[in-house]
Length: 302
Image (tube, rainbow, N blue to C red; front, side, top):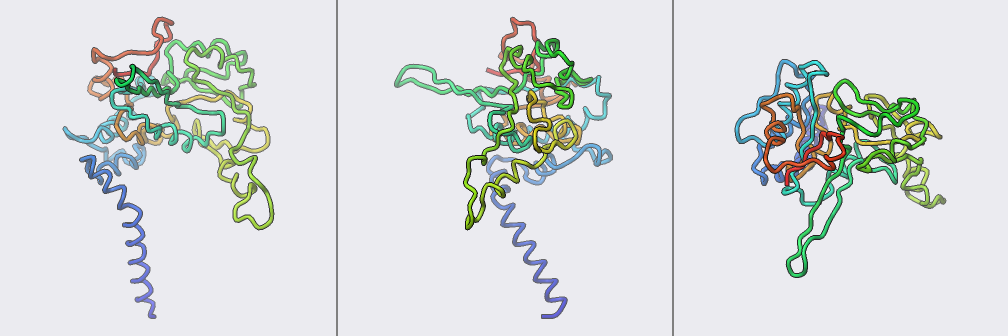
């Protein structure tokens, strides 16, 4: 086979592989009525790299496209001028747990650490029974009870109003965990899902290989955190941070991008034209435990 024939075969192979991989995704998006090209562009675009080619949303576009365009717009503002909020439409949540799983994958969460559980509740009496699903990320309170109790000031609100944890500063006393009225904080005890799996000759994948993925670093707060020995974040308090590392790169939080029902919305509430601004002023919006005065930044549509 000549060199040109090899190049042609290689080109055909790449195209076939690409179509095989992208086909189901494109079909799914088409079934939703979304324009696959525009949705893919919305998910993959990065504001800093595309400042001169900002995404524009049109009426009727998929909410992901609109939120991505609004995210790029918000990132042009100074950090203190943005107010990130999340809106969860409980009428659209189907309890698929895609948000929980994507969060675990994005942040390489170990056993016992879940940033975004989805609580399920059965309501009614047979035969009139329904199920209700309530995702519960960190509320990113404007008046967070978890920050003043930290003895070393390892948890604090950043200039955008998001509550962060400084893993290098945290001493693992867990005072913040007990102070959070939403139970949105957990402790990382250093466990792995594969630690009880066998190690023996002849196994295709034994524990030593299987846990490589779990030892891979995550990128929370914009830096690599390798899970080695007893170093941070092992031993620290951990919580949802609205995927700050993704936002800074112009991407929506993982739970928003993967919500199949578009039940989770995200954006800048200081932009009066944003989707979240529109939603949080609906008459059917609530916040959890408002009587505590915590002023959560997570809103629910009921």
